[in-house]
Amino acid sequence: MDDEGQRRTIDSADVNAYLRQITGQDFTTKDFRTWAGSVLALEALQACGACESWTHGRTHVVQVIKTVASRLGNTPAICRKCYVNPVIIEAYVEGSLLQTLQAIADRDQTCPLQGLSPQEWIALRFFQQTAVREVNSGRET
Image (tube, rainbow, N blue to C red; front, side, top):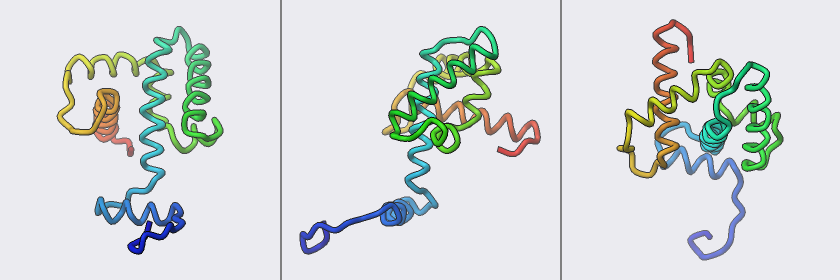
């Protein structure tokens, strides 16, 4: 609704401009979809449990991507390419994801950031740890 109470059509450019205005940062709706897709993927991979082999892990990843894509209203290909951080998939298939998430949950019992769910807090801490490891190993994130 505009200032005169009339309905106005908005598009993604309008929403993205609003997000930049209120945050003072270069955020877009894609950032929020990527965050949501990544958190959903973490939750779903945790529910799958540990993978017994690389092939078993890949099977879980395919199913998780389909589930997340459905929740986001995208195809699995677009979801995997654009909305699930690949670090999550790599860590799951190599076998370190679940242990890392459990260690974070055990260590960080409460979230100090208002508005984040416990799963979002764990995801944030996972990405922070991943970024530190990447920097320390000399790889770009």
